[in-house]
Structures are given as C-alpha cells and as structure tokens.
Image (tube, rainbow over all chains, first blue to last red):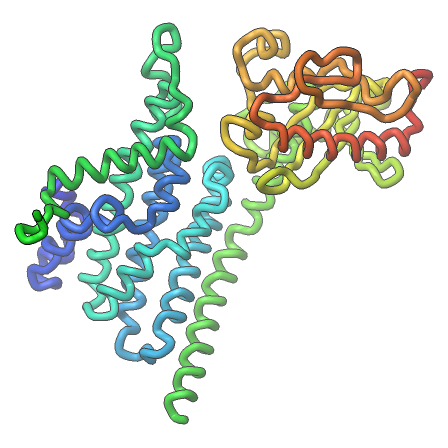
Length: 223
Length: 223
C-alpha cells in the first residue's frame, strides 16, 4: 500500500511540490491513515460499510470533498481572517458536500438513497475539517490538494476493506454477486448490523498497528 | 473595528460565492432529480398495483406504461391511483399512499386494494429508516412471485402476508391488526420478532389510512 498510485503525484513530478508530494501521500494513506491510525471520521466508516459498493462511493465522496476543500482553504489562507477561519472552512466543505450530494441524486439515484443522510454528514466529518485546519492553512494549494487526496484515499481504502469483509461475511456476496454460496454458507447477519462494524474496524485498526508499528508502547511506558 | 468590517465583508463574499455555486449546481441537476423522484414513485405504484414493467427501463418508457394503466383520482382527501383495465374505465385495483412516523424516521408506503376496495392486494414501504435487519425488513424484497416470497425463508413475508387480508371486519369497521404470534382471520397479520415498535407504528399508520379510505369510499362488504 505504501507505493501508492502516482496520479496525484503527477503535478509534483514537475517540481511543483518541492518533493513534498510523495511524503504527503504516504503520510495520508498509510503512516497516519485518518481512520486506522488517527481514528477520525469513524461514524460514517461504521455506518455505510455494510456493502462494498456503498463504501466505494462514500470513499469517492470524501476524496472529492477533501481535495476541493483543501484547495480552496489553501488558496484563501492568506486572506482569511484567523478568527472566522473555521466558519469559512465549514462553508467551503458544505458547498462541496452539497454539490456531490446533488450530483449523486441526479445521476445515481439508487446509491444516493442507500447512503441516505451519510453523504450530507460528510460536512461534519472530522477528517475534512482536520486536514483543512492542520494542513491546508499552512501549505500551498497543490500540495494541499495532494494531502486532501491522500487522506481521502486513506479513508476510502479502509472503508473498502471493511465493506468487503462485512458484505462477504454478512451476506456471502461481494458487489451484489454471490461468492459464498447459500448451500453451505450461512450468512452471519451480525456483520451487517452496526456492532459488526465495530468488530471489523477493531480488527482492521489492530492489523494496521501491527503492520505499521504505530502506537507501539514507548520504552519508558512499559512499566 | 477595521478587522471586524473585514471579517464581515469576507464572510459576505464567501457566502455569496458558495450560494451562487450551489444555486448553479442545483439548477443544473434539478430536472434530473425531479425525474428520478417521479420515476421512483411510478415504480412503486406500478409495483404495488401488480403491473409488470421493466425495472431498469428509462424514464420515458416507465411514464408510458404508467400513463397507459394508471389514473390518479382524488376521493375525499385520499389520493387514489387506479389501475385501469384495457377499456380505460374499469378499475382493477387501487393504490393509496400512506405515511407516518416510524421508530427512527418517517415511513412512507402504498397500500393497494382489489376492485372491491376492501381486499388488500399488496403493501410496500418505499421510504423507511427502521433498524436494519429487524424493523427495516418491512421493505424487504424477495425474488419471485408472491407464493415464492411467502414460502421461501425471506424477510419479505411480512409485507406479503397482507395480500388477501381485508381492511374492514365483519361489522364493517375499519380494522387491520398486527398481532404477536398466530395471526388468524382476515384482519390479522403476524408481527415481526424484534420489531415490536416498528410493528406498532406501521399498524397505526395503516389504521389511519384505512379509516380515511373507508370514509371516502363508504367501502363495506356489500359494495
């Protein structure tokens, strides 16, 4: 996962990001993955991951919103009064979320119905606001977009993994296609319900921690 | 003072720009969203009336099937979608929309009645936010026809068991009861385990619409 897709790095190759692009990408997707390491934006990750398809669309939504928000927050970072910067951020986030929601409603009605209020709730997703506050306010537009993209992808990957296993174990299907046949496999409905999401997310965070070595107890903490 | 003015001006401009962007997107998608909503309503009405149509048909085809078979009447304060026979006059069945509060959010659906206006032809719930896997099963859909859905181990049995029941009792009083264990008689259906609250709310909203229907049509056994 560390050797991430080069799409977002394309503008960086031209030297636009001063070599910071790859590092930013790695940081968002892997090293401080918003869900698995920072455990942010968990609400939607738990709510919409009962099917892989939902998870993917939600991931795309977050990438879109994160990239857009980071770009504009970064562009406006020098003219935004500090005292009202959060209100400005929320206004920008809300605009992007509503735009995505409208497009979904117009072109993928069924999906929009399945995701219900969760697309709109991206406005309150801490990942988006967190990246705007922590990164976009201090960095130039292009690298801020890379950061938004990386965090969006980090979120999307985690959601896709959870969605894949929840759908597979809970219904025996993947993307609506039966994989585990009903003849010998009894779907474990627990995984479809909300508690199953907690279990799945818990295992995934544990796995991330083991693989990345993050959150290791410090030497002095050991006793 | 100067800072305050700047902050106010900044917010005003940002708000204006966001509002303009949203208005533009809203305008661009409004037509498609309206068509999607209309198509969904038509699919629900056709479905509950038992008119066959292609699920993935484009909007125009759907509208053609709808206009050919269905006529909207208003009897008293009740909207009634009539399924007309080939002669364009004889009413074969009638669908009536109903709505009410569910456990977590509003529930909307259609109740369709045979030509006698007392025998239930079908019930659907097209908008609900009940607990997935429990109350949410009111909206379940199973492949195959009515008998298959009742025979199979499918959660849509709840919806399907309404077929053939009557909305008035032997004394011509409006009646439909969702009962715990062992429904009997033409006015009772079985409740779902683990969905008592949803069952109560569904019963309340069905009761409400049935009273209205009976008042509007004067429907009775003798009709």
